[in-house]
Length: 110
View 1 (cartoon, helix red, strand yellow):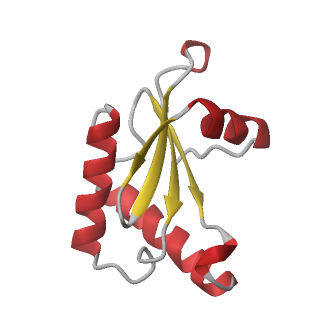
View 2 (spheres, rainbow, N blue to C red):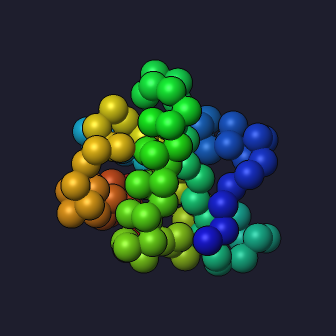
């Protein structure tokens, strides 16, 4: 799975990405630049408000698994997924449903 690693690109995503919220996750989505090709990328963010490092890492791991089950990364889209307080303990089915909902609302192919 290709990920967004550059701090500059993350800043651009937060500044220019389309924000879609759900009670389990927030998605920032932006069209992939043509010079980079059609392959999409993802990034996972869990802020310190969620708790200690164990909780933040669990939240990102759960989001990563949901992206794999949902067919991500999506071609033509860069996606940043931000964990929310219920992400770490959400049932996989509910998280998959949330993932499909935010991706669909943002207009990315899912």
